[in-house]
Length: 319
Picture 1 (cartoon, rainbow, N blue to C red):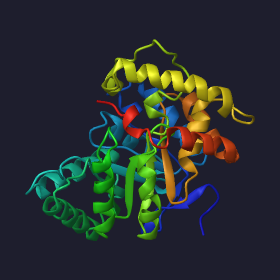
Picture 2 (cartoon, rainbow, N blue to C red):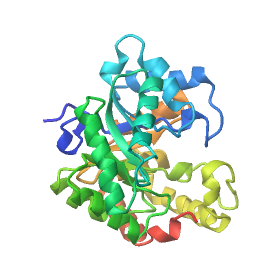
Picture 3 (cartoon, one colour):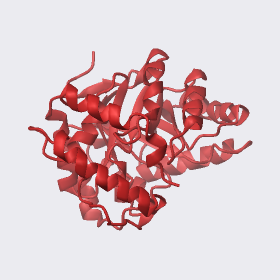
């Protein structure tokens, strides 16, 4: 049985917070610079709010290093389920490269092990996949990681995405799979029950669509910085128009903002272990964590969101 506010991460048995902290924004690479004092406040704010699941990656700028400096003080590391990722599993014969990347993550995170280690944008070639998973299983036996995951490549969600999800689930060698699932892009929901029956935990990312579902933007605005420039202006216009329409019927008390609706939407399906939500400021973090206290979306609202957007994933993909 899970503790209040926690869910089991697939066959690993690890209990993770329903809302995980996505530490990409504090790394300063894609969302603009974040003063370290602010980043530290965000991390402490997440832990103080009862969160225990932190998601980072080797390629998230200073994220791992900042986390290491914070979590190594006192006994904070013992309270946290720490996940990071490697991009080095995508070519044949790269097992030494994966080991080197894991060792560098452990050094920066100032820890002897990570709780969950993902193949980041994992290979689709079965032979390469199995070589990479051989490496991760070896590191698991060495005590350098507790659970193995696949963070399914994006940012676009297509039929190939579903095929890759099933490939890794069918391998029987992963404990968790991380994937895109939001109001606008619901396609991956078709693998949720399959993963659950196979003992694979689902970790959802991009529930607020990199801020596009925040309600801060209006049709005509164009966001051109960082990775969000991959969405062309016409797609951004359509998204912001749809958000305006959603606000009119989805913001029913006690819901007061679109991020609340968006995160709750991604959190509700059976089989979802955690939703990763990023934050650059303490205020953003506090708003994220407040979603845990909200009741489920009204059935009629959820039904409308599923009916209107359930078949439109490709329309909202970046290019």
